[in-house]
Length: 120
Image 1 (cartoon, rainbow, N blue to C red):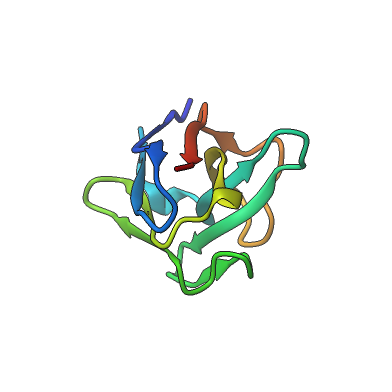
Image 2 (image 1 turned 30 degrees about the vertical axis):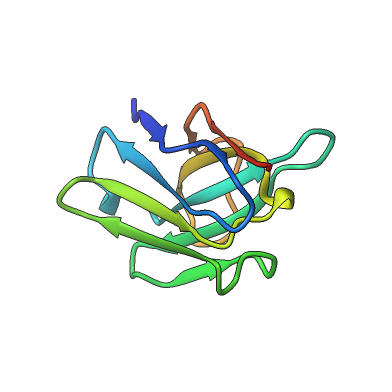
């Protein structure tokens, strides 16, 4: 059973930065893709960013130019660097490890989520 443990969430002022980490209990190369989704209150879960086994990245339009996804294969960890944060980035952020390079499936592996709150 694969476990994903997220860390790095918190409260930050608008314009600030945070870095989320997602540590996997196994090799991240065993997954076709890993990434982050987020869910704000009353809204559907949406893709933030993902990185495929081959290193290709995909970002939501709303975070392009502000967020960067990366990985450290030696540490089996995926990161989400978030800059120029906005109040609308407030959500619970979930890490996932997927069986395909496209959108995540409910049957994929998911972390428990980490809260990001952007507020003055």
